[in-house]
Amino acid sequence: MVRQPAFSGYFYPDDPATLKKMIDAFYRMPDGPGATFTQQSIPPLLGIVVPHAGYQYSGPVAAWSFGALAQGARAETYVLLGPCHHPGRTGIALSEADVWQTPLGEVAVDQEAGAFLLSRGTGCGFDGSAHVREHSIEVQIPFLQYFVPGPLKILPIIMLDQSEEAAFVLSGLLAELSRTKSLAVIASSDFTHYEPESEARKKDLPLIELLTGLQVREFYRFLDEKRVTTCGPGCLAVLAGLQKRLSGLSGRLLRYATSGETSHDYQRVVGYASIIFPRGEW
Image 1 (tube, helix red, strand yellow):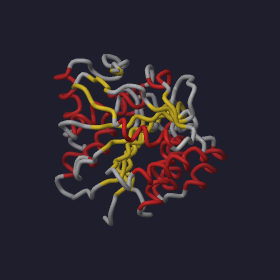
Image 2 (tube, one colour):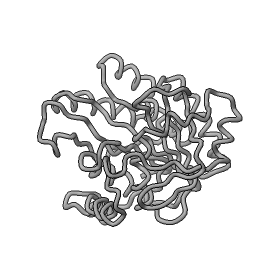
Image 3 (cartoon, helix red, strand yellow):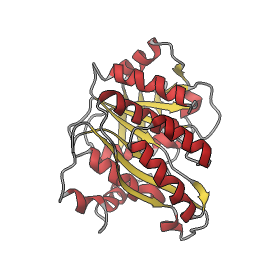
């Protein structure tokens, strides 16, 4: 079964040459990651945080995360965690597809890794309805194909259950899976939605500090107390929880921006962040 692209030509170009040119331009912007990464080394990464808006809005931020990911060795499996923006059935939803198609070609799904999660009976299940019209994972795959060329294996997971409990369970499963497979986790989330930029920064930057400090419980508490409208908190918590289990090393914010930089509407912005979690000391 092939999962066909649902958002090409909408969130990102459907023409392969145009798509590659756009991603390359994000990377090579004068203040973009290309110039920075030629001057400093990036360690191998366990995972990255990326936004999932239309490329014209969040693509420049996403390029920082994927550009950093490409500095290290290839992973055997790239775990893609995304929230669901529409109803679904399963708390931790795996893709039924064998292959995901994008304008840049096909990417294979790691069915062995999916079977491992299913075997644990922890709320994971196949749920095509969660994936077929969801953009939070789809928009990451062309970036991954561009920065990590060649055959890839992915494990797409939509988290309808964004709770701290679900994140704890899934981070434990991925920690167990990492004993037999080299994994890199791509956690998809935007931050504050549709508030003035000044307010978005007041909420997002302290929240990101808790996340990079691997303080998952405090992260959820801050979300609740400050009513931060982050759309993928569970995805972020899984990555932070996995990092805490495997190394305990802090993450690092590479770039924060808002949609206001593109739309020039600074009264109703969405926050975007590039965050990395290293495998070793940096």
